[in-house]
Length: 194
Image (cartoon, rainbow, N blue to C red; front, side, top):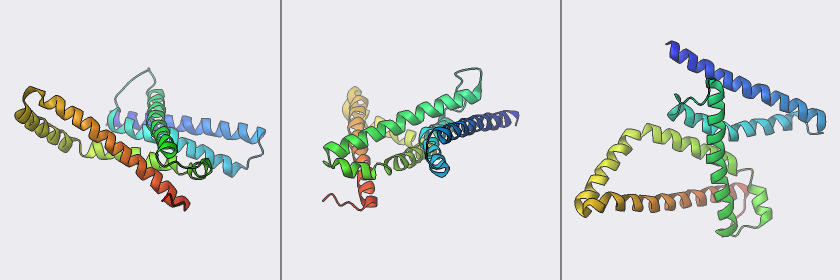
């Protein structure tokens, strides 16, 4: 029970720190810009959503006991920020790359729909993290059966061939997901690419 309470305290300290930093940024921006406070709050909340929430979910699901420093709240902050940047920014880069090179989207259209990219990616990252955690046992069992079958049919090279096939299938699925994100963005913006 004490361990659970300390983890909740750590989470509260991390989110309180993020809240304090957010208020400091709001104050600084209000003093030096003419942007309305509502717009600043929306921008900072969206930044928190993009830069901390996906990583925080991954940390809570998979890395809850990892310690980098003596301060567990700082550990959560660092891991949440780093994992969010790695996942969301990498996928955003890929989406932008495919928008330019695969769909041949004009710059005006990309600018018009770029507000849709981060929320869609955040939802996708959180969904995949929760789904993998939920189906972890079933996926491990399925992978073991598949590996055994490949080894039976192809000998000692079977697991390596399975890994190569899985890599190609994973890349194809990633490409399909990126195309789906782009098509959702385009549909939401009212643009028809075809």
